[in-house]
Amino acid sequence: MPSLAGLVPLAVPTADPAGLTRAASQGVAALVQPGRRYQGTGVMLLDLSPAARAQADLFAVAGDARAAARWAVLDRINARWGRGTLRTAREGFDRS
Image 1 (cartoon, rainbow, N blue to C red):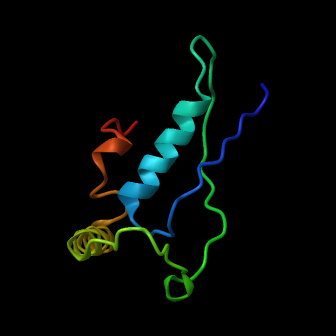
Image 2: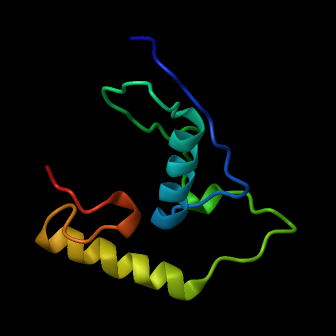
């Protein structure tokens, strides 16, 4: 089975799980072809760097501090109760 690949560049650096999930979903949607069978998928993150070195976009709206606080809570809950205890709805509900 031939492999397919897509690239979804982000406008600004982010560690926001919702934004990363949205970008991954867009990438998959661009590759899916009706009637074609698929076996699996994966997501790779490229050009990762520490947040302190991220170069912001001069014209982009600044990040939402409340959103960052919500994701910090999600991370703490998952660290305490196990990976995947809380997830974004976009990840789906089937845990097969």
